[in-house]
Length: 225
Image (cartoon, rainbow, N blue to C red; front, side):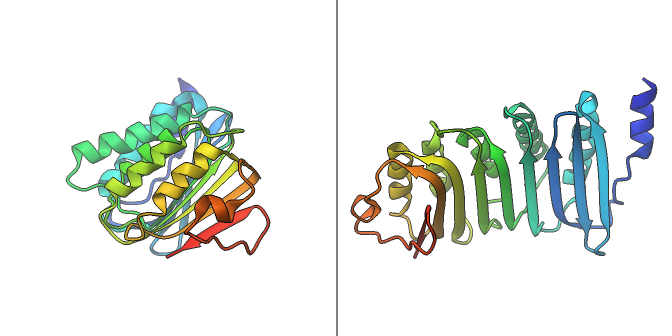
């Protein structure tokens, strides 16, 4: 009880009248770190004990309700082996979008150390699709079995063409097929870049024909439209 009160007293959220430009959330084993950069260039960092996750959710909701300006950058870095906390953040964003007049506006989003594509898409789909320009997804699993969930970006995007960057350990045949399908939508994507450690079909030029990927670096494919 005392720790809970102490944590709330130490919480230093920015005043509602000061817009935030960047938000980074680090989900660690024993704590959650919320780091915010204000338009005044000042940084505000608040740390929450993992046992008091609800306090983080309450503060995060307050931030979302008062954030009317477009965020330049939004990042969630998951240092755990599962997506449980990521799912709760996704639900918080979704709840906020349902109860407020506007969804959170973000130009660039990084989701780091994800376990599955559905969680990543749930977070992205809770944002304002008219503002997002850049998506960077980094996965920690050996293989992403639900990679097809990424198709939802085609229906969801109502704004500018997206720069999509994905990092996976194994770029399987199933994953390659999903990306090949995305290549048929140049009106949605400005570029698609895939980083991988291993790949299901090494003859990438034949697999993705007639789309020709750039191969400037090993274990990286880049498609530009």
